[in-house]
Image 1 (cartoon, one colour):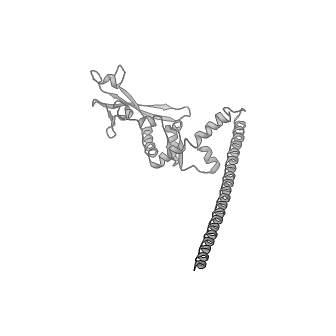
Image 2 (cartoon, rainbow, N blue to C red):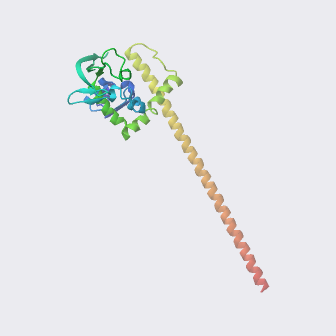
Image 3 (cartoon, rainbow, N blue to C red):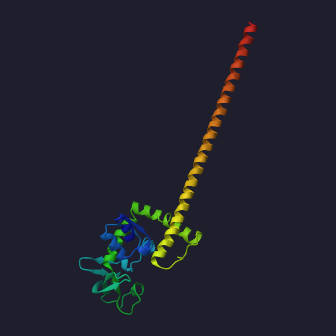
Length: 250
């Protein structure tokens, strides 16, 4: 995104990417720059499955009281907030994590299905990330989101496959940022020239095919006209002979 902005002077209105880019940091960046995030997150497809939706023990499926800030476990016990923590990514982005804990899991008949901890169940929840996920989920399941999801396997994935397997371009041949950029730029230019050549060649073949079809149509039309005129001439000759025969008989 930043490279796009440096080149064109603005950010795109929409961003489409796979789940590898579905992080809180990226969602925050797109929100700040008013980019619609058609970007999947981990477990997006898993959340759509019936087994996931029907699993009442998953943290994503527990009821959350936003006003009083607590979760409700499957047996009805409140899991209250007991603290906060932070997580820092390799890029330096800091995420705020809320920690919730059940009051008493001793003697719970559902404990073996709920968690494997020897103490009460604890959960770590990133509310900001969940907020972004809810927004992304609505976008990805909308008609426009379904369109972008259907186009992604066709547009970039095919290029990746051709690059790695057909062209055997699996690693850079040079060392250093500028040399790597030049390396990939040359490859991308050659790749695009090849696509342009195939497209132009396909267009020429289609035009030639259309010309052949036009010639066939003209030839068939000419043959049909000749046959029609011959039939009319023969019909007129037969009619004339019949009239002559009747006149002679009279």
